[in-house]
Length: 344
Image (cartoon, rainbow, N blue to C red):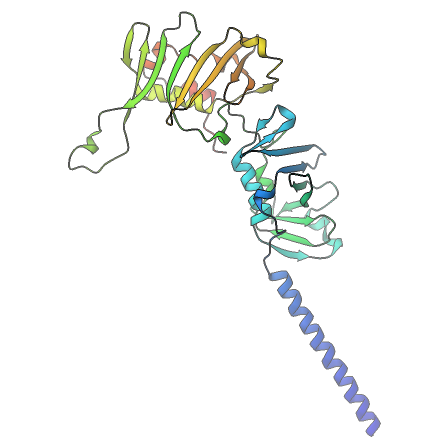
């Protein structure tokens, strides 16, 4: 009997210890799976290159040059700052939680050998982060995504979706505006036209106008009021404010169709027409209008040294007619139709 009691006591101890072990393990797993953590401990300032491999096998590489991001393989095209910011914040500053540590779960979370691969590198080209991007959580349009660091089975749910940084262009994320947003330029306040034979508009100038009725004594203040004055071949006249703003907004949003080699296109600008664009800080940029083909027009932006082509239809709007500045434009007008407002 004593021996039997000893055996039963031993079994009880084993069962107790096993239950205690399982309880501790479950608690540890709950803590592991429930805790939030960064994917890696990397500062955004240390990232100098970004490599991307799409699901279709296409690859792209971006590089930070001074304070802006560029795409070196396409004549140093500018990259949209908002898209790069979203990508880096998603990967480096957004917390993630573990959803699985089982390799057999990879396919369920959209993590396959053909999944997109994102790589962040330092100035020496050393990888700081390499990860496969799975499906959105819970779907492709969701604001979160599943992700797996290279060489590890752990699957995370990242509480952001890096895929939202990419558009459908090839290569993606490029800033197609001639006045690239990475330049952080102020609003245009003056345009001087030069080199266009017999063109009647010499200068278009933004100035402060008379205060609106709401700005009269005793009324609450509103924002500044502007007028646009044009210096024409036959004298100075006040332009229709809405028409002038439509034209200037078109210049600010003007986007290119293709980039070209600055050296190979040099001869196309020997007899260029020019627009001198002055912003609110007094900075003057030169937009040169070079040779044209049957369907496109070559431009060069002196600030960046880049050469572009745009459609002939857009090029015709670069030098507005007197009527377009002095009359009310139809709605929708040609400037807004040619270069619609796009947020990002």
